[in-house]
Amino acid sequence: MENIAHIEAMTALACGIIFGMGALGTAIGFGILGGRFLEGVARQPELGPMLLVRMFIVTALLDAVTFIGIAFALYFTFANPFVSAYQAVAH
Image (cartoon, rainbow, N blue to C red):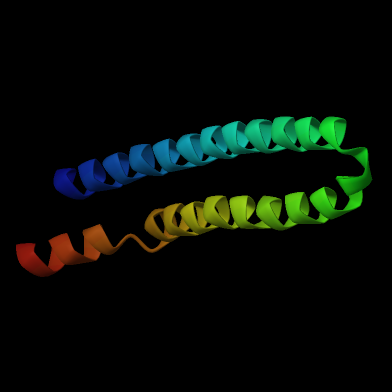
């Protein structure tokens, strides 16, 4: 039983790291994206609407990567495959 608690604790720690790195990566990506958008509009204001549409597309892709990471973390949290694999080997 102690090993299962250890597996669950390490899984929770890994999920926290996944959430943190996902948030950090998204924040950095949004910062770079917003800065480059402002640079592009400042250089050529007439391209503003086209750049805005493209920025929203890249924003959606950037968020999708984070949500995939969150989905994996939630899967490992609530349906931990490591515990069931350990129980199959232990018995």
